[in-house]
Image 1: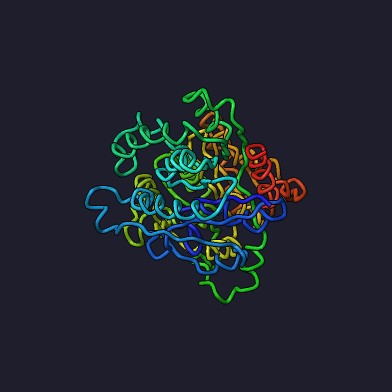
Image 2: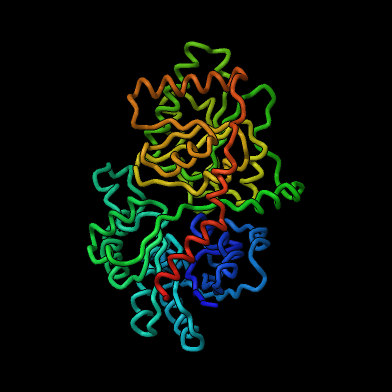
Length: 428
């Protein structure tokens, strides 16, 4: 058996999107000849929603090491609220202790808390252990540089410069790259030509059916759906908002507004619910959906809850929903792990994505819903969305006839197998 030390700042019971690949992979590592240990931040210091049920999906034999983080009350005073920055020293110290006492064949960073990635170079030099980076999102990105200040994330000035400085350090001696998007890898190779010679692999997020089994077996543990008013045609979206989704939202709302004008009785029965749109702590999220709805005079038909909900609660909400909605980014590199729970829920699904997004391509490959490409002419887009909404509100739309055999290729076990194939390339 080979062994891998996994660096994942967020980990169950913390409900963070960037720990899902690791959580879903852990049950399968030993099937392919690898044992794994995880180093994570003490969940009591993790600034995200906690979902204790997530712990049920972790194999009992997995060793979990925890590290501390500096107090957020202290770090935010200096504009360093990032959990990655506040845990960097403690990560270095803890993993040094682990590597002194035990041999590992590989270190695997799977996180969007990017600053911790710079430690890979340090540990490789000090202990000779190669490291792999899983690029779930872009790290240093030029995406917001030409956007107005009000569309940029908080503290963008600082994070942009920090990322531009740290990314080259992590990439200098990396032994392998995994990414959810081919375009992420292409961007990195353009920036750092030496990366062309290292093992690289595109591995999308996977689905983990035991999550749905757990929810169905424990329905009494979950809060009732918040959208059960009779006679209403509800569309449900669970996930982040943001300025990069404004184009999709405006198209959706424009088509809906056209329907209210032309078919008032039918379209007035439609409601849109957006849940968990901010990563901010509970009660501190800034709405990004309602301002657009208010501007278009549609607030009567739109609800936004910025607070995130627990992972299994979100699955329960999807299972109770009438219709599902995925709002994609206008960024061609954008992909979304959320598509797999949406598909497993097996409900009518409308998704708006950039034509190059892997998420939209997966939905189409599995015949799991209707994907509308943002690259189409605006008038065509509005008419397609309008027709979909009309068909849904009038009961003409049926559940998708999902190609489950095609979907199976995206299982968590198959995704783990792909990770292991890359690990073996590096550790021969």
